[in-house]
Every structure is written in C-alpha cells, then in structure tokens.
Length: 79
Image 1 (cartoon, rainbow, N blue to C red):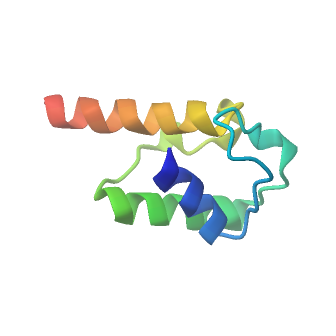
Image 2 (cartoon, one colour):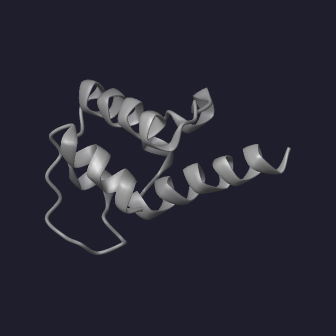
C-alpha cells in the first residue's frame, strides 16, 4: 500500500488522508499521472502489470488497487 501511495504522490497526486480507504475517484488523476504511477510501481516491485490492472476506474479505493497488485505479484511467484 505504501509503495502504491508513494508512486501516485510522486506522479503529482496529493492525497488528503493517510487512511486506507482513499477514494480514487475523489481525485482528478489524469492519464499521465496514472501511467507515471504505474511505471514507478513496476520499477519498484520489479514486475510488469497486465493490462487488466491498468484500468483505474475498476478500483474504487487505493486499498483495492494495492490489493490487486499484491494478488498479481503473489500469483506471479506461485507459478
């Protein structure tokens, strides 16, 4: 969660809360900020995220987005 949050903040998204239930749609995250955050996340975690995880509107909260990335990474290492 912390890495994901930092990646968005590095891309210029300033969250108002340290709460795990940050509602992503409350923020005007543009496509450039989202892609910058994705590239940072991939670099920091050493993974390449699949296209199905690259749709911000599928995730109501930062926590749900973080969980999806964690689940993907866990599945990747289980193979």
